[in-house]
Length: 400
Image (cartoon, rainbow, N blue to C red; front, side, top):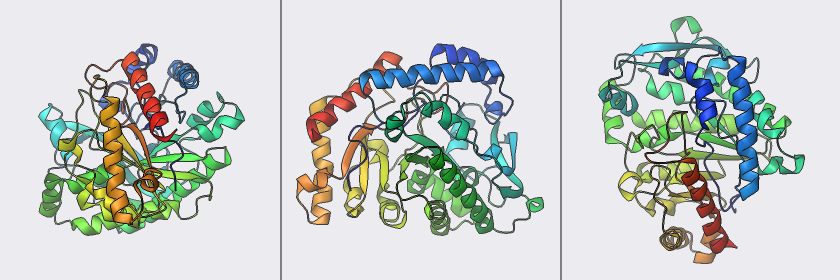
């Protein structure tokens, strides 16, 4: 199956200065889950979305996204809006988190003493949609025939659970006794959210799960072992939850998963390592149609060899253009990389390289601003749009 777009992008875009200025009152890390957003900030978000949608339409960037402009960070605004969850703005590092968890370990080296998270303290229930208002702002700046050309992002269900100290993602008072019970109810909320967004016209959802790459990290694996956590069982729990949330999605709602290794301020990533350890399970035991994978740096992300596990009927968007550096990639080198990826798939599936090419697309390796202040070193608005044009142009030359 061919990807929806041969030239794609991951969703988040650099914030305009007007939006950064408006959100300055909410810039503290402890406020990332704050639901007390002034109307002036909401107005600035809406205006910024209108402008970035027009820019994408003007230069032919697809899919069309809202840049995640209504969020302080890519996973903001979801868990804390579900019934049964409570934001904890100042959990202590490292005591409240998994042993040697790469994110908190990295933050501690930067001087952080606490980190915000969202903990389950009651029955997890879907009462109102966390993201419908965001989708409607994006949708309403598009003609109805363009709704299918839009993409909307949502954080993975395991985001809070994977970082918190084992056994603390839910409290005793919540009524849950096992992680499976917690995820059973959470996956129901995700399924309900997908249906709500679908009913409002969404046809392309991207679930962001960068933490799955932590299972490729020896630091994370060794930390789990110190905590007494079975790493294989934990990965099974997460992939099973992904399938639960997708089980009853509408047939024409396209669902993809994005994985990376961290995309924070200063071009920071948290882990390195090939997809090799998770590739078979990722491609063959999760029910997504598309996988958005970073491949821009061999040292950080490994080579294309794990693509040999991609089954027929699924596709991969190759993240070959970096959002971490302003230097423009050489189109000819990118084309060679696309050919190399297709050759791996062709050999594994016993098909021609032309046929294998049909299951590929390209994009930047990650979003341009996973949080409001998280652009890559030297990245500017002009460079961002140049890189998106580069992706568009290369895709046109390769696939027509």
